[in-house]
Length: 117
Length: 110
Image (cartoon, rainbow over all chains, first blue to last red):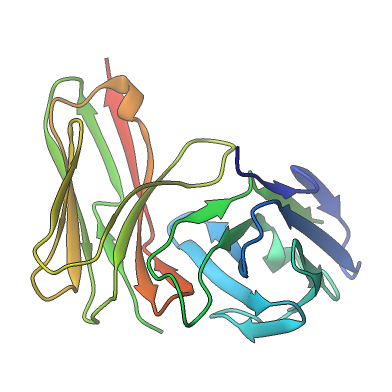
């Protein structure tokens, strides 16, 4: 059974704190993604990575950074948390290097609901 | 950024009724996927369509990809309470990125 695991289901952090959200996948997928989900806005891509140590900005990267030191792990970092970063954060992984499989399924973790107070 | 517009955003109907959810864009996508998300969980893939005009059926759910690969629809026949959930369309950009619509929150009342 394939699995994407996010380290926390719920987090409460204070404004200005540095926050780490961790995601691990066991499917040996090249691609990993971080989205945030807000009511009425759907899923918005923050960052994605198509290989170890490689990263690309998504649509809303401001205030976030990422780290991918190992293939199975993709971390999202909020350098200085702010209240407008209160949201549901979803990690996903997907097979398919540029030269190979297209249109593959994205597998999601269960999400981390982050509240910044 | 290519945008996907879903409509309606909310839909509440009675068990046994039929419904259609739409996903539209001004851009062409290499593929279109539909996901369903239940409370407290991540989205789960229902179907992928890749060819313009393609129709796929999954029991009572029928998915269609527009001829120009800019839009898609999800039709549910004889809706059941178990169909309740958030339905998301996602357009493929190359082999890697997915662009998501805002979602349609569907409630089927017994």
